[in-house]
Image (cartoon, rainbow over all chains, first blue to last red; front, side, top):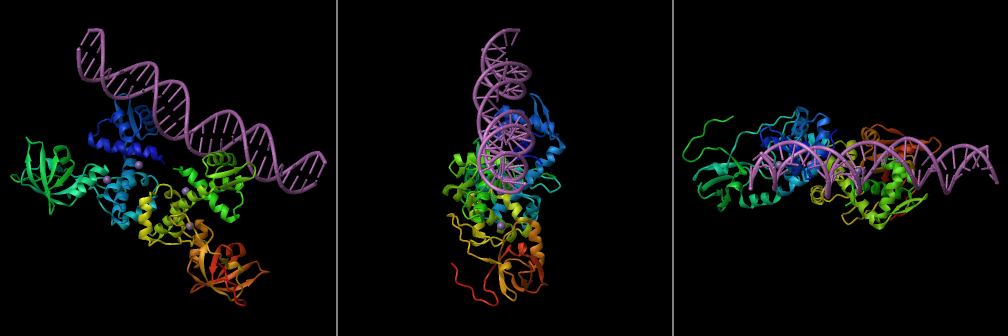
Length: 231
Length: 231
DNA sequence: TAAAAAAGTTTGAGTACTCAAAGTATTAAA
DNA sequence: TTTAATACTTTGAGTACTCAAACTTTTTTA
Ligand SMILES: [Mn+2]
Ligand SMILES: [Mn+2]
Ligand SMILES: [Mn+2]
Ligand SMILES: [Mn+2]
């Protein structure tokens, strides 16, 4: 069994590989994500590579092997099921669930995980809209566009939030920008570099393009155009 | 914050001190409970004593200080609330709950613990009938007698089981000897060294005195005599 | 009471991390 | 194209455990 330290490295690696479409993750990036110095990351990555969970290319970066990916997805499944469980069953605040799950993900047994999964009705997404990998280690993340890409007058529904920090999540919650919330884009002038989005039954919220890009939505169709089919 | 290693030492120390009425716990005993060699226990105990959580008397043993006791009770509270939670909410088997809780007790936050406590309705005993320490660090364990002490013909109710091993718990469960079960003592001849107890609606179970002593009951009044008042 | 057994302690070494600081390779700037 | 900045790696050392084996003290047995 992988130690909790290694589980954290693998999970961050998987998450980062999603961002940078399969490219080698640079050491500095990984070190920052895990919260250690670059030297520590280098040492650990070499050990991880030796156990066959990743491929290490000196001075280029690291990439998970198939085995490493599977293990990472197992950890991610535990993390996301736990987040949902904490929010739905225990009533823990949305913004705190991530931090709690970060610890619990390493000590929950398969038995307990299976009961949680059952109790939640085999859910497919966590409280932030992130997909929950199956127990067989599969995830399907549909292509989504963000609030930043929608034109003035569009109506859409938020499905996923791409930031786990409790400050951002608290802001999102008080603004009403939560998964399943219907939203109208009141203004999106590319020149302004900011948009105004109004969640159903709430006052409009002003967002920078950076902030708006963190809210993934569906459907993507904008006011003037119909969107082409996507997988 | 105490590491999970130290939390385990403290908890075992507290549990053992209950058995041996406050006497110093010998190193060998502690080592066996924690599952390390005597040398390791000696080293760790010296460190624990240095941080003020225990008093170490070389070649005599260890004893918790007030601070150590409080910390131990906090761990025990987490352990027992978790056991009940695992059984009641997640439907984990009675015999497995202890092992699961052994890991979880070190990573649950105060926030999550408070929610579990609330969800369970501030319970006072765990699934084995062990009392749950209050958040202020108080436990009251009423004086109880065991099945072994009852005379032939006595009727009583099981309230607590003094063995956490999953084999013993499975045996207890299939026999019907669980907390809250009503039991009649069919035979208890001191010369035989074994008793026969019949749980309500179940066939009688033969128990050695050692096994019978693990089932704590109330009331203690036997067939022929009335029991004197106890605190 | 001396020898043997048991219980406890110390020492030396190993694992699994971690960091700071020094050294090396790669990339960007001048 | 030399120089400087950046990224990465290596080295040496520290923490928090752990064990095996040697040693010491206490208790038992003869
Ligand atoms: Mn984690
Ligand atoms: Mn999440
Ligand atoms: Mn434990
Ligand atoms: Mn218990």
